[in-house]
Length: 353
Image (cartoon, rainbow, N blue to C red; front, side, top):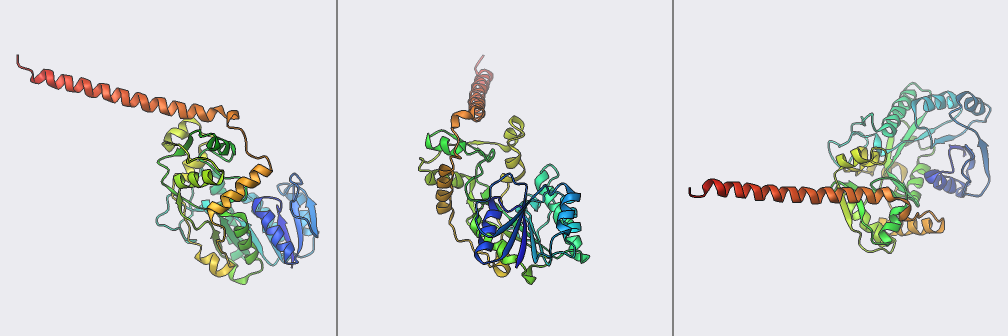
């Protein structure tokens, strides 16, 4: 088959590229040229900015017919509208990389299925715009402009692992040094993660697959673990002691550091677990890499690529922990003092005159 991947050098798309080359497909990657491809092989490359819509569409119109286009980077409605103009009549199948974040949070029931309500908060811009992309694309599918499949990955990892306040990897160094870690809320919301190679196989399973036309699929982790357990699993993978977890209410984090707390405010505080039955049936999806093993691989890869930062370079993190601990201590002291005053007051009222 002749395929185009818009992207092709990112986390998931690198896995897709590797599998497609392995099975002998003819592959073109359209990228910005800013990230060197990890996969070697008979790959054609085109460099450009897909957000330069007129130039991108002229490039697409000059290409031969693609059996399938896999769009890994579209984030906004105007980008998928451009894709519709670019590939209408020029591809047999268009696969859109969406996200499980398109669902309303909290969900009405768990695990979430693909027919659940999709109305994320407008303040969660990434999720809202991905949802808008899906609506635009499925409308085009209904009109016969493009044959569309949407795949909604969950948190997909190959090296970087998320934590409560972002994607920086200094938290691995913190764990190894026995330093405390921030966790949103009580750390008991459920979370799931999935290794890149399992997700990539699902995308490949969708290519040209008529059962997927006009449908959406999520491909997410199948070990439903609390955030507390997530931290403990990564600590074990990094050879660190069981972490000391400092639980801070999401509302507090959102006020203290609005930029870094967007993820936990809009996403992590809610349980995020998904039913993969549809992907198993139609895409051949399988969850093959347990998180304890996957986390070890991720940490090793981060070490090899020198991605683990020093905790000392992020003093803001300790500042939040220290401020919260001072607040907690002050709250306890004030409460105890108030109780003592209340007891004294009661005793004074009942004392004989």
